[in-house]
Structure formats: structure tokens, C-alpha cells
Length: 395
Ligand SMILES: *Cc1c(COP(=O)(O)O)cnc(C)c1O
Image (cartoon, protein in one colour):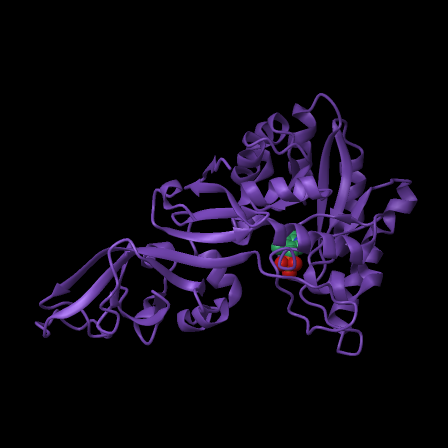
């Protein structure tokens, strides 16, 4: 990697071919007739929404599911043309103009929200209806769904293009499935009203990652995998499980300074600034505000020049201090690997995550947009983020 593309020397390396590969594995699993809506909320589970969605659009995803209207607008401003659903991040009636202006699909669970879109729309604006079936969260309760559909379907200016729910969990068929089945039954009972109203709705789904893999019969007309697109499935690997890989290949930084200090906050309890014996340290870019856990200071390590180097302290917002006592050859500008490979050495994402004491979703989404994302295609860097802007890297 040529460092001249970076403006901040702390970055993630993301392999877009792995995003493409995971999508292709899911497409092969469900076949051509089931629609796929990758869940790309939370900045694409922190992978960076713009480049990953460009790849998903190109790979043939049918919809994108984003978390809020800002993410959706950012995608439109970066040339993404495909249908985008907003799961829910605001009151639809307070942002109706934006949904219309940017051709975005709102999730509707009240008549009031539907009316606000209907009132402003000059053609039949697509909407999705959200049903709550057992996750205990957003959506109209399945039992009240028929009444909502009747009222929404009668409004001019609206077309019901999708109906969805979110599963609480699912597992392989020989494992307990009562809860998933109960959710599914509630969903089916709710949508029975569609026959009665002779409404045809193209996208009907309630299958997240585990449900779409373990329960083919729950796929209906579509699936909405999130974690699988980003390389993770909570299910154990069995026949029929798509082969997935993590697009997030590495998290790296560089030494901004190498020096001897006469004292410093090296006590992992950070109790005091002590006048320790002179200590040889390196300061890398990236700290607590970037998503590095303060726990990293206790027993955490990184790679510098292929060696494991202990973290001396990481309580700074934008920097982490490394103890270079056993790596005297380290120089300013050297690459630091938090996870990923360096020469013959490697720290896995799992090791880093464990030292942060976070589960995978917390770990990923804890990495802030401060950190540049460098994207790779065909093994070469192709673009880099600076905050929420993206810059192409010329070959
Ligand atoms: C996030 C989300 C998904 C994807 O869930 P995964 O378990 O990550 O696959 C599906 N549906 C809705 C409504 C979501 O918010």
C-alpha cells in the first residue's frame, strides 16, 4: 500500500471481492428467483457504505436496507440508483419530502406515515410495511396488520412494494425452532389479508442471516441478510451453509513518533503519571475515539517489524502508546498491525476483538468513520475514505 493516499495513518483494509463473493454465495444458495436485500445499516456494519453498496448494486442485489435517511442520501449522492429501503431512523411524516426527493422507500407502520407520503407523491411512491412478529421491536403487531394494509392500500399516491419482519433468531432444523416457527406463523396469518384484498406485493421477507441459511422454507419471496454479507454467520458450518469470508482483512496504523521518555502513564491502571526509568516508546495513530478499547492497554499487542509489541497505554483519544523496549529497530513511519498479516506474523480479528472484550457487532460498529477504509479489488487498492468522502485510487 502506498501511504500517500492516506490522510490519517490509521486504516482498515477491506476486500471488495470478499463482499462480492459472499453475495454470490447467498445468490447461489437461494437461486435467481428469490430477491436479496443486503442489510447495510450502521455504515454497512462499519465496512463503509459507499464502496460496498456500489459492489452490491453491481453484483445484482435487489434492494439495499439502510438504517437511516442520511445513509440513503449519501448513497444517492454517490451514484447508487437501485431501490433503497430505510428500516427506520426517524418519523416518516417528518421527512416525507426527502423520501420523495431521493426516491427512498420508507418503512411504514402507521397510517399517519403512509398519508404523509401519499399526500406529497405525484406517482405511486413505493413503501414497505413493517410487521412485528416476535422480536419485540418496530413494526405493527402482526394481528393488527390486516387493518393497516386495508387503510394504506386505499391511499392514492402509494404502492405497497414490500412487507417484512425481523426474526429474533433461527437455527438448523434439528435444533429448537419453536420461536422462529411462531414468528413465521404470526407473519403468515398477518399477510393472509393480501389474498382477500387481491393485492400482489413483490417483496415479502422475514429472513435474516441465520433464517435465510437454515430455513429455506422461510424465504418467501426474499431474504435480508446482514451479517452474512460481512462474512459472519452465527450458525455452525454444515452442508448447505454458504462459504463466507470476512471482507475486513486488516486494521493498521503507523508510528508517528519513536522516542525515549523519562516518565509517562505506563501503569495499566493509569493511576498516576510516574517518573519511570526512561522508556522506549512508539506513538501510533488511533485511540479510544476511533474504537480502540481502553482494555487494549492490559495485555494488548500489535505487530511492528513482524514482532509482537505490547501496548503501553491507550487512554488517549487519538493515539495509542506502544512499548518498543524489545523492538529497538522500529522507526518513525513504520507500519503497525492491530490485526492482519505482517510478513510471516499475524494477529487475527478474533484475537484483537477478544482483547477489546467486545462481541463482533460491537467490535465492528465501534470502529468509527475517523478511521480510513482502504478498499481492494483484484488484490489492488482502488479507493480510500476520508470521513464520509471517498477518493478513487488511480491504478
Ligand atoms: C439488520 C437487519 C437484518 C439483518 O440481520 P442479520 O442478522 O445481520 O442478517 C434483517 N432485517 C432487518 C429489519 C434488520 O434491521
